[in-house]
Length: 139
Image (cartoon, rainbow, N blue to C red):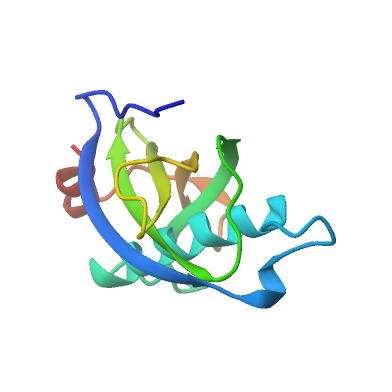
């Protein structure tokens, strides 16, 4: 099965993540929870790279929904190429998407997931409008 990123999504980042021996479970493949860790790692690296470092006294992104579709098992040893996309900027939210493929099988998507991100005023614990600089990035 091939995962297609619709044209409305904007490619923003990619990174390589090593598959560690400890990522596997008793069935000999990467545990399903670890896929979410890979997605999170790519998302955090992308956000750090664009200067999005939340501060508890300020504003920043919070994940309100996350999903992952599993197409093919990942196994140790190997390396995953995570490709990040963004879309659908709203007043306070945007979507992130990520595909995961082994670097030795380019183009074959092993898993794909995403997250809805809401911009929050941390002190007020309330959603607030996306900053203009973030809206430009995710548009």
